[in-house]
Length: 204
Image 1 (cartoon, rainbow, N blue to C red):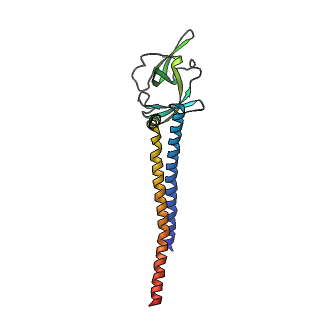
Image 2 (cartoon, helix red, strand yellow; image 1 turned 60 degrees about the horizontal axis):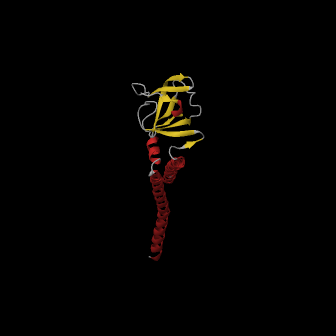
């Protein structure tokens, strides 16, 4: 009786573990698919509802923003309305975006310049940022390490991100199916052995 209860409890635990592993793999697969599809559709970082995910691959804003993080930024609308202490993403060069904190707002007539500095840097940035070069404002949301995946998702080989969790899910499903079939076959074999033994005894 105790043995039967123990087997039932073990079966419930295994089922619970299987469900958790499957859920994790499915969540990973869906999340990566979302990142890849949105990245390809937007031609770069994923963007939705006026917000965009940016990848940070330098340590200039540590410890607040870790190297390899993704951050959520709000696309700039009124580019002249930022204030000291705001963290902005701006165009430094044609193919370079920087996310730093505003240390001073310089107004000269209708033109606005921002002096900026990385929290982890010793000195301010050499050149002030023109308001028209501001791309977005940091919202405070960051996820460490995910930026490495996001950066790869934006590359030509980004679709390969879907292969690993998809393959793991497929292999795990095959393993679960094989184990379930094995559990069905074992009682059948035992039953066949018992019938064979009973038949042998009856014959003798």
